[in-house]
Length: 473
Image (cartoon, rainbow, N blue to C red; front, side, top):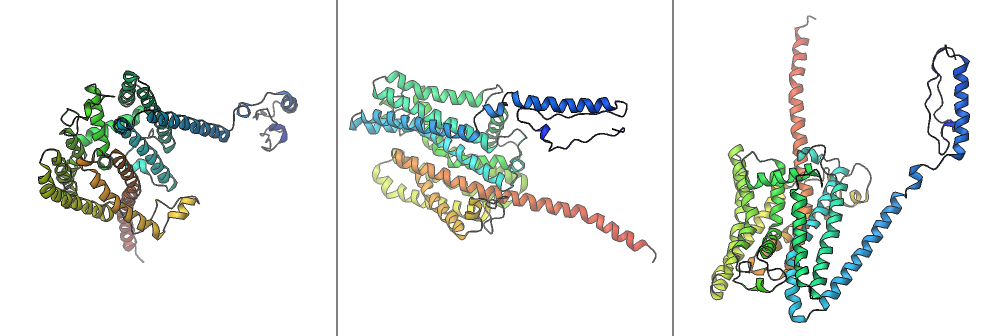
């Protein structure tokens, strides 16, 4: 009133009427006099009148997020039931003799993408736990600000969960109803769509994240630069998915040679048959990539642990190629000679890998961050500092290490249900391995930064001591 600003209480009922917007007023200076006060009172009265007849806000029209989420869940359940019903009826239409061959071929085309979908889901859980535990994973992996969060990862996994089983259901239905040509087109269309989504140069489907993934894969295949944490971390995950890449190679091979939805591929001597040399070669490639990374790391750092780690990955090579010899030697020679060597190499690889996981990759002295959430949470209460978690992690890792080595055997490739189950369990083992590996790296980064900070503070303290000693008392 007298030249100063007039304060309006934020909790005034006149400023918070439903349907009206909060108004901020500048009442001016003393030159306005009583006219400013009158205008202010008129504005309040107009707001009161508008609050009765103003339309509903946009937020009131839209459904609540909880209701929308429940609706999506209902649609997902209905879709899952329809896919299961159509798939089961399609399989039951076939004779018992052809059913196993048909399911084996269907699993070969779709189990790689199903396992990749499972991996994406679990990776989203990893990121969610890291966020809850205040682990700066973006700093560890050197990600930019546009990196995918766990919610975006789960959105990608949801679409993959819908698209892959839908294509598989279409394949089963069309093949069982005699539409062989259309059935053969389903996996080809799916693989082409995945390749286009991954390699598209357009700013769609998270271009920066796809570029980061492809660049890291390039660095894994050609380790011409210094090895970063993201490089060998992703390479370790690829070793757990070597069977996925082997099935992927066989599926693409059949698509290229037009053997989809036929029985020509079942011939052992065919280009895509069980005697193919490409099967053990693709199985061993992820281990060779990791081996070359360790050698490159030793070249850069001269650390002996890099050589010991390279030795660990080299023990997987005899397991794969000794198993592949079953298709190229006489059965008696395989049973009496090569099978024993294969068992010995499998035990050596399993125990060595288990030892390295527990003593080098992990730090099981205490759960410092991963399962101790910043806010009270049920998972944090159940897992953090519990002894059963230690026993479970160590025991399950040992058992799944052994079964994974057993699954690497090329002569077990026709037991598709067993192999699919063991591969899925290996993905789960790698999922829990990620927690402790990233936690260990985060603790190392924090300790290193603390040491550097203390080293930078020491000269200042010494200078203060010298200055204090120079004074005359």
